[in-house]
Amino acid sequence: MRDDEYKEAGGTMQFVINGKLIEAEIDPRTSLLDLLRDHLGLPGTKKGCDQGACGACTVLVDGERILSCLALAVQCDGRSITTIEGLASDEKLHPLQQAFIEHDGFQCGYCTPGQICSAVGMAQEARRGVPSNVTHDLAAENIALSRDELRERMSGNLCRCGAYNGIIDAITEVYAEEVE
Ligand code: FES
Ligand code: FES
Figure 1 (tube, protein in one colour):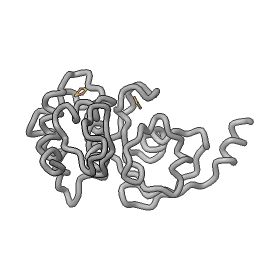
Figure 2: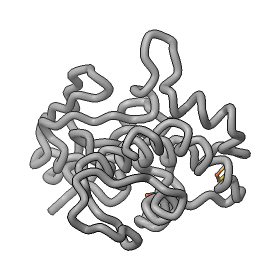
Figure 3: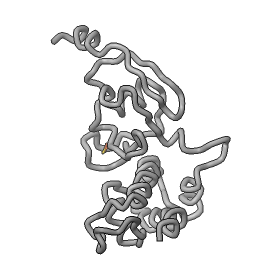
Figure 4: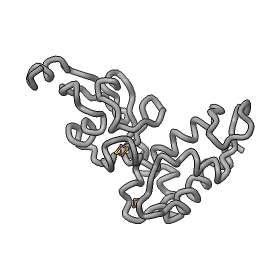
């Protein structure tokens, strides 16, 4: 297919992004990451590797964390997407954003939007009893987020600055007690 034919095949798609209904006419080969950054002007979601290895591009789709570099925008047509720009409300930071500041959970900050979106999705998974590789009780309805659980569950989000201790401290402050 020629490029213009691909564009026609894409047509208009609708998304709810950070609570706002957005319509976009895009080539169906566009990744969700490129839709957010290049078409919708939402640069908070970062492009690290662009191949599913670093987690910098993590966003929430209908509340589930996904790697937006590996998803096509067309797969998200009609769905609700939350990026780092949508987590704060009424000028108030999300509690996890605040905790990252208080616990020095970042240095350069490049991985931080992905870390935070991933942690929000991860906490939901633990609440629903989704086990990880280090979960002892696979039948538990609600899994306590120990540091080992957090390290394992956040292992898809790399931090080249090595701010891991602060990241785990921040997530522990906001989510660990909630599910214990
Ligand atoms: S940019 Fe998507 S995983 Fe690295
Ligand atoms: S804070 Fe720099 S990569 Fe994580």
